[in-house]
Amino acid sequence: MSDKILIWLRNDLRLNDNPALLAAMKSGTDVCAIFIHEVGEGARKMGSASRWWCENSLKNLQTTLAAHKIPLMIEEGNAADILNHYAKQQGFDKIYWNRRYLPYERDYDARIKADFQKAGIEAISFHGNLLLEPWQVRPAGENPYKVFGAYERAVRKILGTTGFAETGREIELSLSSLPNQSRSEDFWAQKFELLWDIGEGAAQQKLDDFLNDNLQTYKQDRDRPDKQGTSLLSPHLRFGEISPRQIWQKAAFISDMNDALAEGAQKLMSELLWRDFHYYQAFYLPDIARFDMRDTLQNLQWQNDDALIKRWQKGQTGFPIIDAGMRELWATGYMHNRVRMLVASFLTKNLMVDWRIGEAWFWDTLLDADAASNPGNWQWVAGCGFDAAPYFRVFNPVLQGQRFDAQGHYVRQWVPELASMPDRWIHQPSDAPQAVLAEAGVVLGQTYPLAMVNLKATQAAFKQAMKKDFDQPDLF
Ligand SMILES: Cc1cc2nc3c(=O)[nH]c(=O)nc-3n(C[C@H](O)[C@H](O)[C@H](O)COP(=O)(O)OP(=O)(O)OC[C@H]3O[C@@H](n4cnc5c(N)ncnc54)[C@H](O)[C@@H]3O)c2cc1C
Image (cartoon, rainbow, N blue to C red; front, side, top):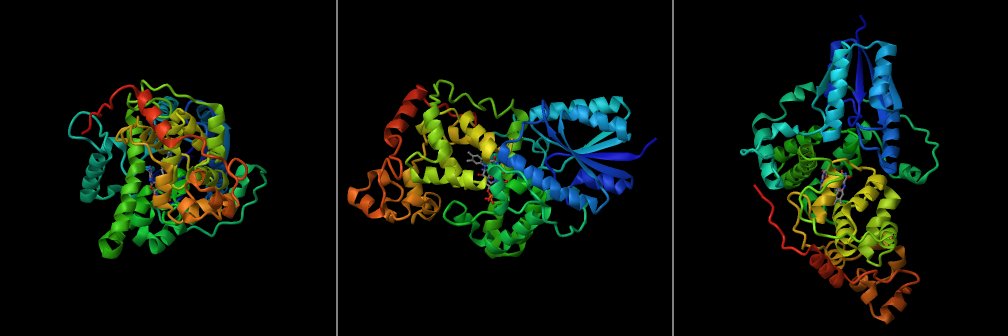
């Protein structure tokens, strides 16, 4: 009888606070790890940008695991077939993993678990990817929480009394400094390597830098795309290079110890809860990347005009903050949260394009593309998500730009052809007097596009297209 344990890594590419890995290492048996780029039922196929991040993160992890004598195999294909192959070839008798929560992932993992158990291989799953697992947050009534505020209160009540009861599982492994990687692929995402440090060590460093430098102003600055006011931890969280519990614990500690930083720390904790909340919702619903969570948009005929969609993707809409966001995304694999809301609102409510089309573009181009947060946020903005802004709340990209990027720094960075526009007109060049445009060297329709739609008219058309009054959701 062999005594080998296989760890199946998925969204948890780290050594610390990794319950499945810790349990295997504690057992003192031979441990090896596998990551599978899944093809088929078990997981949504990664987009290009996140796949690039994942590959580099795996290279880092391979090195750090090797230092602990754990080989990491990387495969691509049908997960069940590959795991069975390794079971036969290497004769492990236990397989461990940290749980995932989307319905198609859970069904698939349950089947694999049952099949292994029939074959005499013990499959054990752990809680490692969320602050709390969906079933730990029980509402008073029968139905799961649909409103973030109620969900947040419930979670804080649980964590306030027990904390992370399982944090004793945190492992104390020191990471050796990560080696330089050789990346040979020549494709669009390759340029990201100049911008991002990948891996568990980089994630911890980024958290510490953020807590030291930005926490005090986080609450005010997190809505400002013209400032670097947020943590930029999302791609690290997406691949589990850092766990939400590790962030929460540090933030909670700071909140208790330092009054000046408490507000920022509490805000960061709330944002982490939004991540959990999207998984919580996804857990109880059919595939949220495909189906509307609520039927609020049922009567809407999406227009889905290819030419308009292309202009949105390329950042050529004629609305500077929208174009800046879409260009930031293409250049960096990231977009500021406030601007994500604006570009999503513009696509769905001004261009009347199905939110699934925007979600798919984000899925392919975001480094942090997340199977719960991406569709969850798109539905939230479009007006069919739970706890979403009502459908009639359409963001005005000109007013939003003037409010959150008042001097136009963000626009000037990503839309350099407008760099010389005065602050007064930077967010609405299509309305600027001819003399102002000439002075700034802008020729509308040539150096920068004319606004592609009339905001007021498209907003009115969107509301008209709904053809029914907004149904208040069954909030509780
Ligand atoms: C249309 C749209 C699509 C989005 N798609 C994704 C996605 O695919 N992946 C993703 O991680 N986030 C997504 N978000 C949420 C949010 O924009 C990012 O999490 C945030 O911009 C990441 O930057 P940060 O790490 O600096 O955030 P910080 O402000 O530092 O927040 C810390 C962490 O909290 C979590 N968080 C913050 N806001 C949200 C939120 N609204 N929903 C869920 N988690 C949140 C993230 O894990 C984030 O890393 C989307 C938002 C919108 C409006």
